[in-house]
Image 1: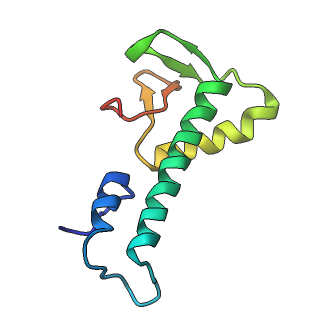
Image 2: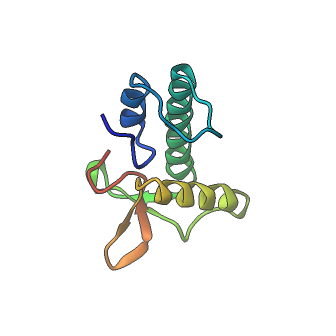
Image 3: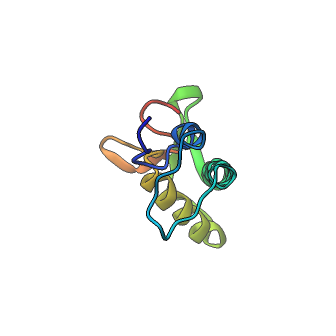
Amino acid sequence: MTKPTEFDVKELRAWANEPICVPRYFTFDREGLRFLADVLDLADSNARADIECHLIYEGEGASIWYDTTRVDDCDRDRVDQAIRYLEARGQLTRKPGAPEWIRPWGEDGA
């Protein structure tokens, strides 16, 4: 098994069961890697929830798009952070031709 190249939770969980080979300044045991996978799961869910709760959407089912231009000022920082996070994780889709509309999951719907 190869080391995960991205922070993919499923790969990280699988990697947690393999021998550990990381630079000497990192000290993760298997339990630490499982904990990190749990942290990523929770952060992913929290970011999606922030978008789903604070943005207005149109459509239903797989056709839902969330409008990033209509958000209360008190929620703007939290939503912006969630968008940056999910984009960095590859879990955000922007609508072709209208990038202000987003989905808080990747192209594959996961």
